[in-house]
Length: 157
Image 1 (cartoon, rainbow, N blue to C red):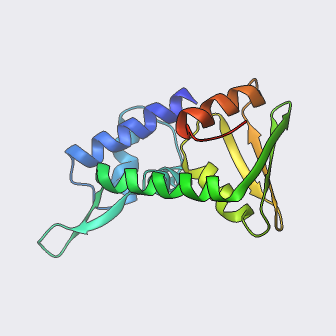
Image 2 (cartoon, rainbow, N blue to C red):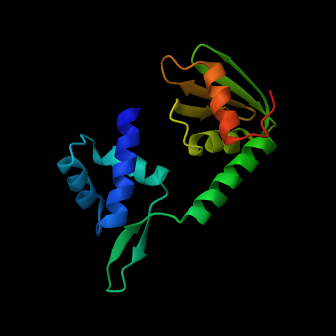
């Protein structure tokens, strides 16, 4: 978890301070800084950070981070989708089950995935009205709820 946070911080810094035209160039920079990762991991990191490519004005494209306003708007959308779709949250061990209104499991799962909770390994949206959340080893349902309430103060028990 700590390595991922450090890597994401390094990716942000490199994109802000260097001219990064491709994943290969970014991967090379990260490896020079001591990070051991694959292209697939880097691709997931870029997606998580919502990195895009913009024209540099000289017929080339470089990586760019979304602005704070855009990031906040995106986070508000995920929070809205979560609150609109979930019914209840329960857990056992490091597995959380979120019951949703019919047809809302995909949106709720996507919201949890995109809230940037490092304690979450991943989610699986059920067919219609259930989301399964797998937490990191040692993280409890109570820990998950506390972090969710930090991200979504309107969340009810």
